[in-house]
Image (tube, rainbow, N blue to C red; front, side):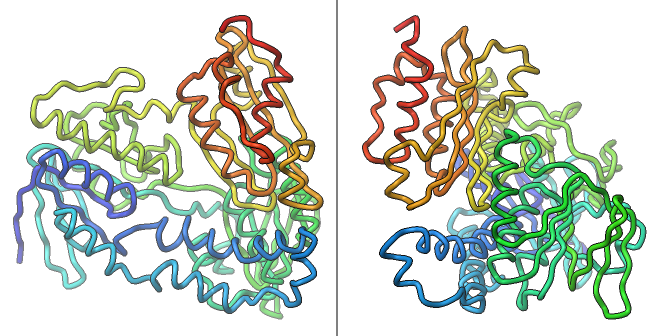
Length: 477
């Protein structure tokens, strides 16, 4: 049995990215359908951003209270892990997507559930759980918003020990007594922090330092903090083999000759695109590959296919994918109507910020918040820059946050244009500093004007004044 339906736009993947593409397309007058094989709301809502932050927040709040005189005397108990998990379940709506489906209906977006595969240009076949096919024909565009999945490295014996991925770690119902985290990136560092807060014995194994791609001091500070939480951090080592021990523990053999044993192993070594079994071969593309796009999210070599979010490998972050989605949904509608397309840098139909103005927060303890270029990236780009470092504990507002505040901030300034091109903050609650830096980078706000953006006292935001003082008065104004 086959059902054939025709739409202006077909969106594959009903996560946050797909929802935003569809919403913008509908607002642009396009009849739109979205396809989802799992839960409407996607990875971020049920297995990534939201549940992971829920798992981290309670222990972080407890540690924050214990760092402030008057509050720490009132803290008499340990973390209630069962209550943390119940709170996580509430935030994920217990993996029920009814509210998300209601939002689609309100937004006038049709939903087809099932597995989608291309069957030629602008044709998508969706097979539901009962084996019934629905053929969706797009008059104008198809947008692939299928995201990414955890990479399972090719380590002998690894599959045999049934390792966790990030989905298992964030959906846990009974935290293990011991956990080995394989990978020192954002997921690995955050989950090591979360499980250490639960009282789990955690070992983190990374082939290099932590949080690669950020300023080196960020990874170093997080590593020191993890050790303070009791995490056994092993860096600059590889996993050579995995095996199950007689006592049921999972054993990892390391390149330095040592071994690590734990009840569970979490693999957090990277991501792969969800483009396998999508029928890409029927439209001349290779299965299992990232989809290469221009700044309007149009897949190169096509005039109808868009790839938005993780699947295009530009910036694997939910907020950045939603940003891309708004541009893509709008440009699809504009092109369908023959309206002007604003695809110049920073235009309404492009995702220019993906290149050098991507903000990101890692919710470890301390938090790491960054945007734009690191010092190394600026040097590689050949920019004439000055790097300004500042100890956040020297800012008066820091003493109101914690009795023993530890933090550091770095500004990367293009000395020719006298604008900020990058910033990194490490410390308690620094996530809330990030958007001001993002605005300064994206807006290319001259330092001469930033002198007039007066930070409130006493707040940690006063670091902005310290950056300017360290740089000195700009030559233009």
